[in-house]
Length: 428
Ligand code: AMP
Ligand code: GLY
Image (cartoon, rainbow, N blue to C red; front, side, top):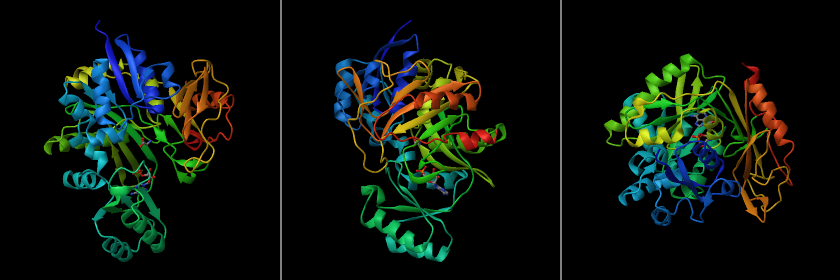
């Protein structure tokens, strides 16, 4: 069997989960990661090239003569890293720039959904703050949902309960430019209610294979309180996403999105992430991401039984229809341990105890998100530090295993939610 040497771009928990799944494949040759992190360095050779450094990454891929580059984060995908690699004859996994715009521009994705009748919240687009505010005042329905057009580290959505809050939000996005150029335009959207579901899907632009569902927990504190974060924990499957919802989404959302992108001359190849809300009027798209989710990947990939490298090759060759993906029936839970203070200011460089020399434990899988490895020890090095993950026969069993391990890992001011999956578990 021909082995493949693979370079994974990125350095968080998602990339660690991808690397550990690639390692399971008998086809896996040398594994590299850039920039990687402390925990990833125990599984793959890491290089100090930033994830959004297109030229640097192309040069590294050439130097390493890899067979494939797996571009995991949104920034390099939206900036065209896959195009840059392919221009040099290097095989890459991920959508090209003209398809990654599905995440890169909310205005693009909203217009696409409207044009092709894909269910989503009603909306208007504004490039002038006064016009946006006049519209919000006339609508007079709150919360008002205001979104910056471009990438904003997952923080570009502001829910406003009053007109005054909307004024502040529009000003900070469009005038103070808190999200930079991403805020030149805003989308003002209808407020939707219902459980949220994350569905990642492999697609080669022809066939779309949804993965098992997941549920993220975006708020920092228990009871869904506090500021939005990159994600404090995940479970899979999502107990709210039943077969009926899955069938509806396939027919009205997943398939139509792939067809729409082809119609627009922007075929999407890679992993397409559907952020869905199960509203009283049926499932609707909250957002598209052009990549694997973080921390969704940490609970979805452990359940994948099909060889990931076979899937990546099938997507490259546009033969995804020849594979049937197999998934473990077990549930999976991931609890994120974050630095105290995250998502605002936090300390770095604090020693972590409770991990073996590989940065792992016997009772759970530890995906490293923000760690550094120095002289045989692990130190905190980011907001989200570790994602403690376990499989179980039931969701409760997976959660119990993950939390038992969490309690044995320590670093100063460590913060984690105690209720990951718990309200959802009760509804089963
Ligand atoms: P996003 O970054 O687009 O995933 O949005 C962040 C969070 O804002 C989502 O997970 C939702 O909880 C919330 N949100 C976004 N759009 C809407 C909407 N139209 N109605 C209600 N909540 C929303
Ligand atoms: N967990 C949501 C995201 O990856 O954007």
